[in-house]
Length: 301
Image (tube, rainbow, N blue to C red; front, side, top):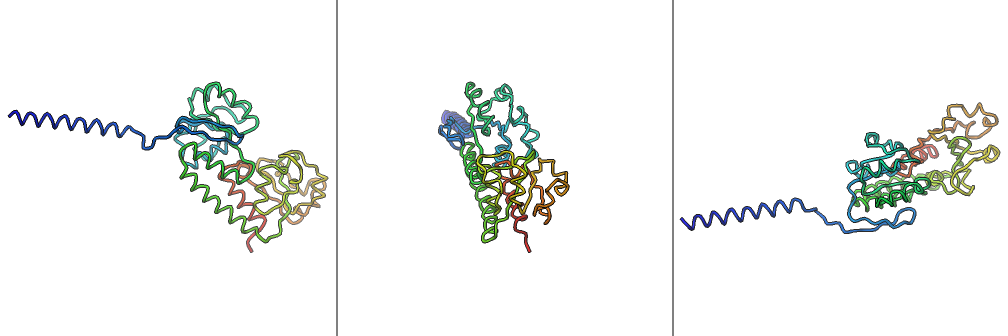
């Protein structure tokens, strides 16, 4: 009888310990993540104690990258400009692109905030830095930068494999566009942003046009964007005239404008609209812009 009680007691103790260890194992992360530091697009070093679980994105292109890396569940807030994919529209909004609400962002208790450069950087970095919230500035000046940024976001969020797969897919599509342009005569292009503005030498749009096999007539002007005179436009006489979809001036036919009916692009009916979000945002959909331009520049026979 004593032996039976002993064995029963021992069994209960062993079972209890097994259950305890099992519970502890289930609550232990699959992978311990050490603290790490990254360098963002501004050359700033940003440190993390662990992989971010709560993300705020003020930048539309960053939001697109995050969703492509299957991080929708981790996104707790985005700007009103973040409208793609469709799921981005239902995320909590923290203000617009140029003037996000710092109080709303702080209240969301994010582990990281992704921003673009320029006016965003000046406004956000110092204010959120005071609250101890890591801010990562990510922007692209070239298509290659987009791929680098995807890998960076994958590193920060623990989605390196997803990032590598996305980059590999995009590289394949980019190389197909590059190969199609190989050996072809590069057409001259004018890209109309609106309000007499055009992309200059250092702009992202200029790099996209070049990669697709075209030559932007405004690419010889130093800088990023600015006004481009009709005198220069008429003198260059581009073979293609492209309207940004956000430039509603395309609603007025070019041929009805004074002097525009003499342009080769107009006479040969090579006036087209390009989706602005594809070519302006340094995100995964830039490959759609490249394909669109490639089809226009080098149509299949």
